[in-house]
Amino acid sequence: MHCPFCRHPDSRVVDSRDYDDGGAIRRRRSCPSCGRRFTTVETPALAVVKRSGATEPFSRSKVVSGVRKACSGRPVSEDELALLAQQVEEAVRASGCAEVPAHDIGLAILGPLRDLDEVAYMRFASVYRSFTSLADFEAEIGELRAHQAAATLAVTGDDEIALVAKYAGAHDPAPPPVHAAPAPV
Ligand SMILES: [Zn+2]
Image 1 (cartoon, rainbow, N blue to C red):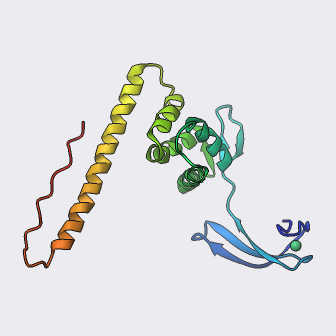
Image 2 (cartoon, helix red, strand yellow):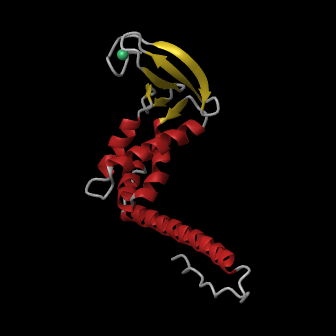
Image 3 (cartoon, protein in one colour):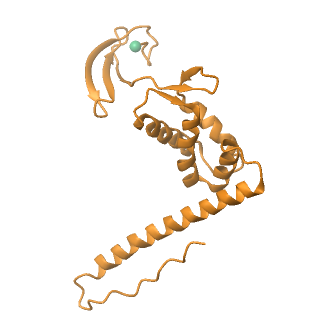
């Protein structure tokens, strides 16, 4: 591996150790030309199997460029796209397979994208799931609403715990009434 500082074509490994619970190896390298040190992290190659049967290395930048199209005109930053691609890679690697169908990459994109931007999510889902009618959109929007309602309930649940904690041990033992979240539409 060449030196990132002076581009010297070779470097020497001075230390190797397990990283990420053995999922990767971290190597400390030294440049024989400029003497600077740098670190590399080695992970198993992750291959994506395309519909044609051909494989190609998993690429975060491909995930980003695919999602970026769906995010056109939406308030989504490059940092958020990069984070999403990282989440997708982590999810795919967590499946434990060295070769993953391209379709599964799309599936791994849907969850984080839904949390990032709903409009971009609908655009991506409509292509990924090959929507052919308004009914397909309606069904997806219904699921999106159900997911939102579930997320709202989860947040309310945390608030309840926070309120109980806040009022526990107070002189007035009765916590204020907690209003239930609106029922899912
Ligand atoms: Zn160097």
